[in-house]
Image 1 (spheres, rainbow, N blue to C red):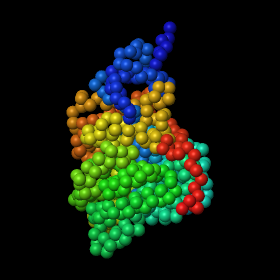
Image 2 (image 1 turned 180 degrees about the vertical axis):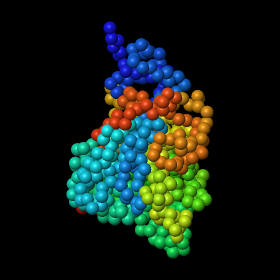
Image 3 (image 1 turned 45 degrees about the horizontal axis):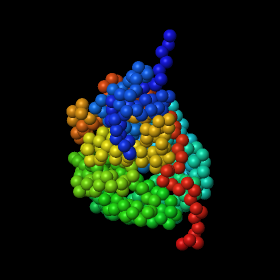
Image 4 (image 1 turned 120 degrees about the vertical axis):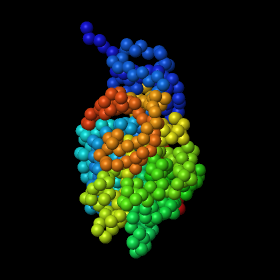
Length: 494
């Protein structure tokens, strides 16, 4: 007689943490969903095919990393991202992330957004270890592209990203307004890379005139006011249209202050920051030779501990809605598509303007921040899982543990059983030859990662045990913070 189990898996004796609650529960999983949360000891262990004993462990909703660059073309000179959807998602699950949102970049020559969505969908199909979705990265907001916003919503994409810098991507203010107005009409959330492209181009030219070319001058070319001015302008443009915007990868305390002030005035502006702005400084760009290029990202890491403290404060007080990795991986030791492509005979320490901007970090995001113990456990879940799910239309399927509704996406940590250790690149699962966090001590790493009830990461028994292709594309709704039906915008109101 074949035994029929009531549940596929039980997770017992753990401390369950969500964005709103911390309590001792046993979790029952059935058909990929959270089936039941019961007081510890109330479930019959014989009723499940598998039982995970989480005594001494924190059990949380899986991480959602809403800012990941994978399999992207050469948008920034020679650089091309090193991770595809297989290697990037493999790295994600090893660090406790169960859903990623990557970018589908529109070619500037395309009038439509749909070719970018179709091409990126093809790259991800049957390739990922974890669940995934896309943001459309807009470089040409043509009338056709703006009309495509409705089609994006029909296909389960509810966010776009625009840039205020980079020659290949920079939009002018009138173009940004066109995007924001159409986003308001279609319930799409607009992500904005806020740096003043004209100022930094001018600064770069002045540095080059003086032959100041080394990696450390990347930070000099992008002082905080470059980010602060653009942030203020983005908030102003969003306020004019009265539609939600998200300022991504905020590094500057002065930009964070502007965002906080806007939020207190009821302006629908949200903000994201990243671990590099909590742990790295501009001095990491000033390593011997070309080594500093490993930490070149935009905006750059800022001055030091005082700036870090202000960014931590913004996470604690709600200025930052989400904490993402901005995983933008480039191989270091490669002169064709990697960081070393910026080295030439006349510039042996490279020309900073040609260094591909970005650092790997999808795997280290959660362990770094959890090890620091600066956020409460509930706040950690809020900014790394629940809020990304809410902001990007995944909630409550993702980012929550609601029986019958939420996917059984879980990350399980055993904090008391781990001894501190140093991060090394050879322990990571990305396709990059370095980590900017090499040698940094952490005291936490996920023991298990589950996606829709299946264990895909088992640190002590095989590591990666999931399979590429298990990940599913997740169709998203509008942000829970977007108005369900915005009134018609009328220029006569101004």
